[in-house]
Amino acid sequence: IIAQIAPHIEGRGVRIWLDIHPSLQAMPWEAAHVDGQTSVAEGYLALHPGVHFLRGIEVKEMTSRPTNSRPKVLIAWANPNHPSVSRIHELEREVESIRAALDVPECRDLEVRILDYANPSSLAQSIERLKPDLLHLVAHGERTATGFRFILEGGEKGSVAEFYGEDLAALITENRVR
Image (tube, rainbow, N blue to C red; front, side):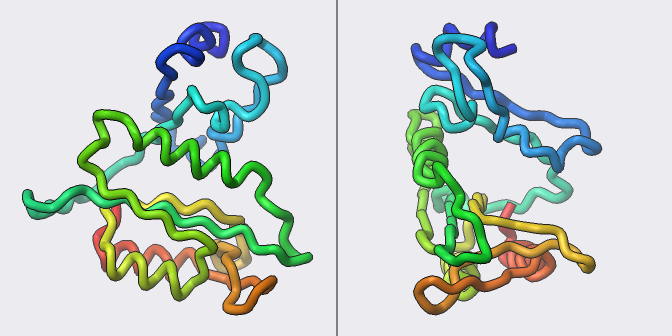
């Protein structure tokens, strides 16, 4: 596959739509790593400026948005500088890659907001205030015995805060985020 898309990466770029079988959806396909298979793509494929991944998801219920409003995208990220959490390397490149993917003519009508150093409170407030149509969260996460939790910035410099998946799910459902 890499050999087939390589000639397109340096030109106009390429969008890769990931329509993945439900049993494989939890795998981090965006973290695909290419080890010198081509001279064009090497390293993490999703971080290459000419590659943009899109994931297919099943939408159970479409919510309508007023026709006079622009679709809203919230990109939130957290990368706490705390000894208990490893740093997310290349986070800036990942956020820039997302921004570049949305900075194409087809997306000119989108209203894109970026929430830097997201903590539970700022993320909740941004979702409630903006009511985005799409949320893209870049943060550490891990399974727990009772579900899933995200590791976000804490209230003080160098601290961390947990944000549980159930709480995020309730928040995005309540605010009709897709």
